[in-house]
Length: 283
Image 1 (cartoon, rainbow, N blue to C red):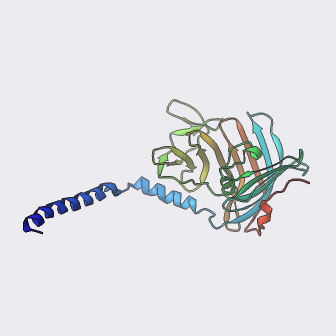
Image 2: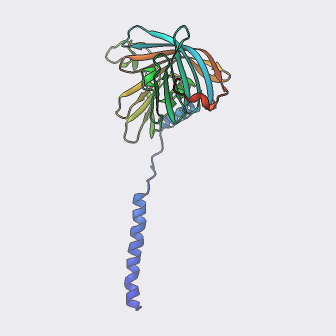
Image 3: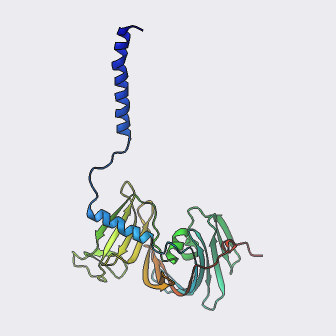
């Protein structure tokens, strides 16, 4: 190889190396030079506290009363009993006021089972993306229902969380948030809202907090289309062996359906057999 050839190749090599590192710089994620503001840091701190609520509660069971309502018509009352194991195993039995079992539903994390004791119908389908709609008339995901009954807020995977002031809004008699700037009158609730979003700005859920930003009062969950899937209100809470457990839950949607659970008895850290979450067809 001549000196002239080597002389020509050196600039070419330098050009390739320079281009390679420039390309890597473009392709690699750029770290924002702008520090997070105080509100963003506070929002992340609050959401971290919420995620750790009752995090050690893995197994539990309870009994209580349940009321269903459709389009604000007459309530249909009954009894409810449940046993659950986080994150997605649960069994719920609905009974008449007299205690006669009517419907049982269970999920073992792989399959969702439903057994109608009155008609003898039996259903079994994959638990993936399944919900409690057939049992509870509202599309609440199985793992969300486990969290709700455990006194936890369902937190889906999100990209950003924003803390907003809710003091300029109140709730009307239908439970919808309306602005007070136009003279609307509502229940007068104040506080703050955590808004969880995906990367492109789609809202996943809203978590409503009290004025001290400590207690969750209501949660709204949204579908991929941006429409409301359901809302849950933690009306009353109580302490059970160091855990903060709901005494009353109200779950509703914008279609006029809702159900309310009033808890009579609750057991934490219950001994649970995996077989409890598997239903078999009636003989």
